[in-house]
Image (cartoon, rainbow, N blue to C red):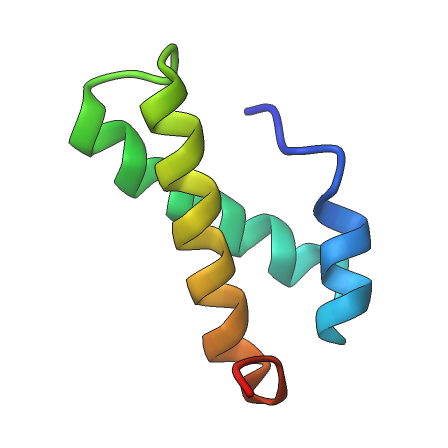
Length: 65
């Protein structure tokens, strides 16, 4: 599974490790894939990234402010 190249940068900014960020991305991408039936659409990408950011905020509450 390809992960966004921004993932390590986002993880550092959120104060979480790369492994957790990868796990959160996989969860977000899986949810988005189920919604859109694949990973080929722009809608998949947008939804996956938005969900990933939500999950990051849940792990790092200081970012939600």
